[in-house]
Image 1 (cartoon, rainbow, N blue to C red):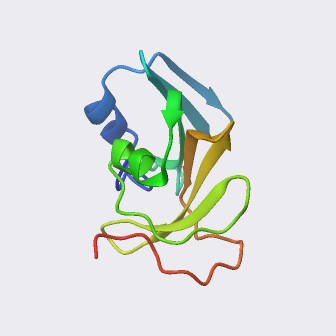
Image 2 (image 1 turned 135 degrees about the vertical axis):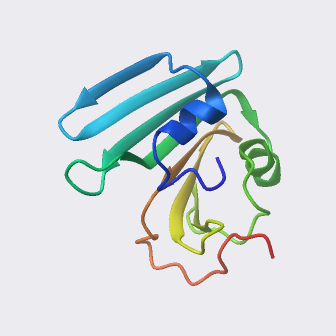
Length: 135
């Protein structure tokens, strides 16, 4: 999932192959990719009229879930963990390879991380913790 936010939608096809579903709703394009142990849903939208559809958000859902944050981040190809905000779901800022800051939420159910969502905008939860990056 690393660096997928803000990329043209064709980057998702290059990484994950053919989409199980591909539909449009207004300016949004929704794609779903499936594998036996996970499902990935993407929302894409152009940033200008006639421009390419760019990935604005993604949600990865895991069949079994992960016990720890490092396991979940490793499975997503995301950098090492940092302190988080939130008590139920885990919320973190996420910086991509170009230095842009995005938002990441890990959804916890029954003590396991069952989904992760990335948004192409900075966190709006007043976080003052270090960003996730390769450092």
